[in-house]
Image (tube, rainbow, N blue to C red; front, side, top):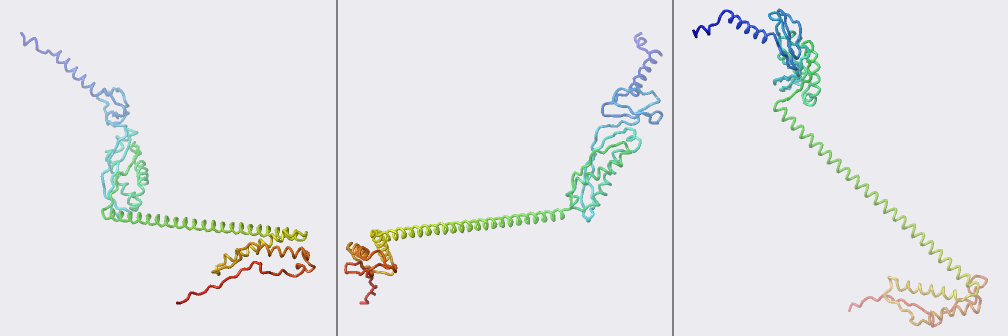
Length: 342
């Protein structure tokens, strides 16, 4: 009785089959497409449409999903390969490619293996571009290489519904001997630049030193010129003062004032005595110590002017020249006597 109660009849078996078939149909023909993906739909093996993100129903046993593609930007590594440059240098080059599928139908049906096709196309163009350049250009113009590769590869993959956004060369590896030669060249170039900078510094220093000496000489000459001008002005003023003093004395003599001539003669006498004392050739100077000698000389001149008038018609003092008496001042200079040998 218990075994009969758990037995399935034909209706239960049919219902179970219907449930299984329904689950199978739901899983196979009800498709959910995620964001950033695209599915191609084929009807009896022929492409009909592309499914975007969302829920989609397919016709059972008639339509099927052909290819599932990602519309996101993808990265493809380019393996290292040996490339010969235009100047016959062997270098190792690798890179990376960034691409994005824009047309899912073309990417699915225009090329058999999309990634392999992009990889081989990029490697072939890397050999072409680098083979047309010298080693120095390759090492210094990597942006130019990237731009050339991007232009060629993007144009070739446009028929596949793919947009190549960037191609970057990651590493360029010259041979070891070339690297050593480049290091020696760089060292020599830096030493050359250092020598040039040092020479330019020394030249600038010499120029500045010469400019300083020139400026010092100019300032020194200017100082001497100003000193000479000031000295000439001083002599001119002194001469003007002496001329004015002489004029005043002459005017006073002409007016009969004997004190003026006395002052003038006494001043000249004192100056002459001072020059005798300052003479470097003299060893011993004898001169009167009494003050009446100088006064007596001046007094004689005064008496001469009082008796004969200031000047005669010829311009000389009237009554003849003055006579020097015993009281007149005199200076006797002694000749140096050589020291005795004994």
